[in-house]
Amino acid sequence: MTHRIRFLGVLLILLGAVLALPAPSAAAVCNKNAGSIHQMRYVSHLLNAEMTYSIYLPSCYAQSTRHYPVIYLLHGSGSDDTHWLQLGLADTLDMGIRTHKYPPMVVVLPNGGDSAETNLFDETSWANVFLTELLPHVEQTYRVSTQASRRAIGGISRGGFWAYHIALSNPKLFSAVGGHSAVFSPTIAPPQHNPIWLVVTAKEIDTVRFWLDRSVNDISGPTMNTVAQSMQQRGLTLEYNVYRTGSHNNDYWASHLEDYLQFYSAKWH
Image (tube, rainbow, N blue to C red; front, side, top):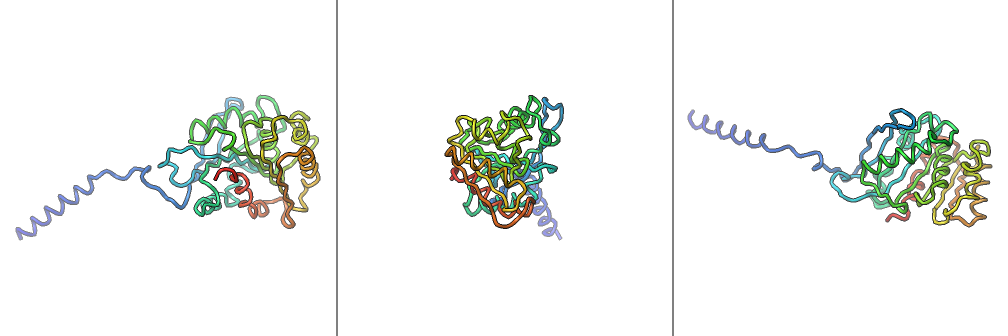
């Protein structure tokens, strides 16, 4: 009986020692096969509103000290910062990074809200909120590159319009810009803010890589053709893809997600 009591006493002491060990910190846990998605907020003083964005951080971001290349991907009309996630962005990134098809990167998915639906180009425009509030917030909060050569922007449908407007108006900020079924129109913005004219008049855009794509029957086809022709005549670096199948919808964009990411990250390996 005495031996049993002693044994139990020793066991309790050992168990207590194990329980007293410090728990592994969150930073020590690293899933090498998957990145993480976080929905975050920032305050827009221009809009006097709280804004949201989602962000993809590559696997083991917390354990690294490196600064990652970054893509800003804008959503289509009527959607929000989950639009690209609905297309399978996170899984596509995880697989591509794991197989070395893409380098590890950070991807920011802003929610433009009502501002992105409004054709304003003053201080309170979505472009100005993006440039003067969101982008600095991201760069102060996360380890993302601040070099244009490692920063890209793109968008779906109306988001494609904003991506081209922002990049053509600020060519020193981005090395690559993509428009996926981008909605361009002569009446959507005045000439000095309209991508249809900016691809002709904007300066210092020769070093930027451009991408446009749509399905053959896309409603945005004629104006996208106009923009592409102007860019080709100017000798800009443009990859313009007109796919035989698909429509102006999520199924189409999801089916080409790998192509988009490969374009944006092509110079980052």
